[in-house]
Length: 355
Length: 173
Image (tube, rainbow over all chains, first blue to last red):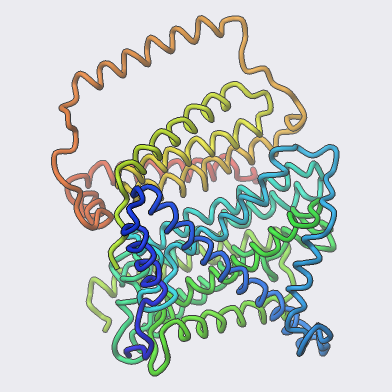
């Protein structure tokens, strides 16, 4: 179970940087500012690369599902197509409608972007590769991701466009509704791990090979995983739950008036969000970075990309739900189901019917 | 890995920045004429309060503050603003000719409350260190010492929930 590479290289680099800075005799305030800035920029670069890769991957998967090739021209199988697209978006004119609400229009993509990245403070990428193992861990993720809803509402309002406004409102209604079953499915795991901290949750899945992963703790584990996956799809506004940007009804939803870099920020944030929900699924249900023979961070990435792959298959093979069907599914099916599952899990924990 | 200890000056600076944000945004909430902007500044104000909680080592409270006030209450307010027709473009005056009088009345009450709290509290207020895992400590307290208030609040919430459903339900002939 022990990884081959020495654990916590990433953190070691920053410890080293921190000690170097302390030895230069800078004031502690500056030492902290510099260390945390370097850490934040490093995380940002890593996630930007992951997001660019996911955009390319999604295009390839969707193409192959539809018996096409997808991007093929720029590099081997179009591997740097999205990098080129990003450069193109950077150069584009920033079109702004005259009737926009200036401040709101400007801040919406910024808040969306920051909210998407903020969750990575507590995501354990590997053994020791965690920025801060807060003891509120998973609750922190749920809290910061609520800012995504605010940003979508702001984008809808700020654009001063009825399609954008409708898209923003649909999105908020959907995310608020699906947050309830999502938190309830997460709670079943928290109940058994006995902690909200991501590090503790991963640690409680160690041993017994894969049988200590929460997904294999029948019956509540697989059920919680499936409900989590459904709600995660809805939280990241992807088909079959993509009514916020239903092209045929709303043009493009909340981001219809955005162009250039501002659009790119929404777009990248969407893919970062998808990676976030997959990373949480990995941490909570699939044993996190636990795995034999290979370094822990490779296991983490493999599992997370596996979940991302499932989400992508969902998107390109299911039809879209109608608004009323969507709400009914959340409130009349998922909420009672996850509540029953939580009660079952609590009872099993009390009766000690688990390993 | 132990967290890199946050030095005292950082806490001080963070406190003053947060305090400034809270006061500014709170003022914006009661003075701006576009009600949607008011709602957004309310979110900023509540978020900054969560920042103060973090400085006080009350991480759980901070997360709950963001989750409930930013994630639920504010969104409810924004929904109400968006769904009310003709509110979008309207400029609403938040004050009338009694504003100055109201300001002084509020000032008197606020100062009175502040003086009362400062004089009746025993300083320094926190006499012992926080428990290591304060989430677990809060959970234990809720299930032991504060069992009755916890249950009462739960029943109150349930009643409110049922009431909301009854009000929103379509009448059947």
